[in-house]
Image (cartoon, rainbow, N blue to C red; front, side, top):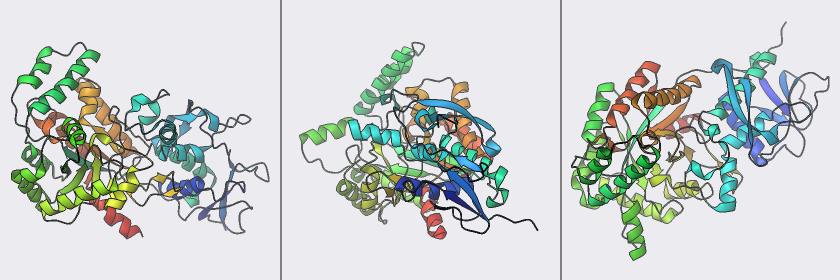
Length: 471
């Protein structure tokens, strides 16, 4: 009778077993790979029974077996593209850290590369040396293609492909049920002088990179009039497609000093929710109709749990609702060592800030909701992170793409999420549905593409319920 293997055992060197990064990696890989049972590991040979063994940095006793080299180093962060068979995703060329490739065999340390991607190790090392990059990929001088696709997912699928050939009964079928989380940051509700100047300068910046942009496009922002209170327009559009979304709203705290006031005037959204009864009423109606309201923390709150908590309390009081459970940092101001722990301390349970301001893609290489790695405490964070893979400004300001190129880029991103059966968020700012921008057409394309790809919509708060069911 054929023996059916149910579990996976990883034999690894004693100095690797118990390392926080290794334990975290195996826990997360179980979801990506789709194992029938929790992965076991140890430095001794596999226990007697029906375990499939992966030899990680340990020579297989018979010379045969599923061997993965142990080379846990990113070195100078140079990457090398290597082809892998990634299960149903087919052949994928994955940027691999060169220092993690075994020189003798040419084999790749798949476990460490997976960890380096999902933990944003290279970014954390940058932050440790120079301070937070605050979500600007341009600060990194190395190859940026590693952020363009869900490469951590593909690494996991490459390992799955190898396991499936040796031990097919250890794996369950992976579905392609993909979920897109539609979000909107409410940064602007009316066209003020501050808005004209800030967005006008964005357009000047864009025109310096792309000389084909017409001066009329710039002048319209400085001198034209348009309605920026477009929440009803978005809600009506989403109702036609049968979807709901999360609207992240900013709460202005009283400034401590003149310097704080000036910085807030320059960088924070230009409205005070306490003086906007119409907006408060709209937000309450959105919640009553099944949408979610998240908090959009201020520019300077990225590392201050007390400030975040104050904003939470103010918002709860104005909405006459409990504190919000999901958030996104304004301007994606973010630190790996401080932001997630501060958010959790303030009461937030889901964050959607993991995204670059100036590049669409997969910042951690994952298209799924997960507990990120805490490099300071060397363990998983309590908070859930939902990666954001695209926002409207990626295609219109940081890049000035044609309509065909924008839609091709959006199709590629969503197709990758679908291919791995993943989860990801996008953000379209509410004011960009105005005549000044006209970016609502691209959002309509997103909604139609969701239907075409058979992607469900989700709300960040759903992830908390799903987590509770899993535990």
